[in-house]
Image (cartoon, rainbow, N blue to C red; front, side):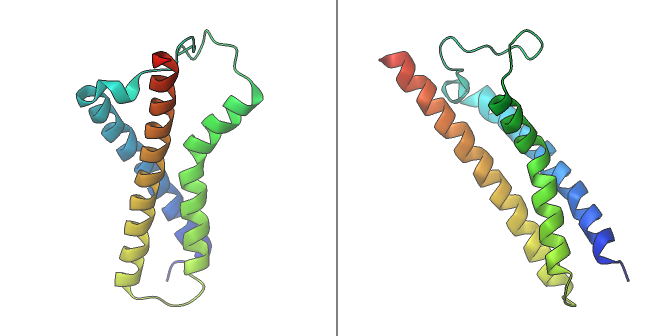
Length: 120
């Protein structure tokens, strides 16, 4: 039987995989719906050439590490009781879909802000 910490580590890796899947989906979205990927006017899009503040760094780290942390904590709490494999599958599916929805909302809201700032 896998320990709670082992399951948390496994789900942490699933969180990284979810980020990777979202990055691939986001790339496809930007290829087909270019207007969703317009950066705000005057924003710096180069990672190594921009002055990055504390808030932007925190946001970047939250996007990169957040899924792994949320997935691991969820699995650690969920493992407290014995669960059927179907329950674990439902948890994994819910986490993947939830992560995708959060990232889509972030992408859409930032894109609409950029477009409205550009238009007027």
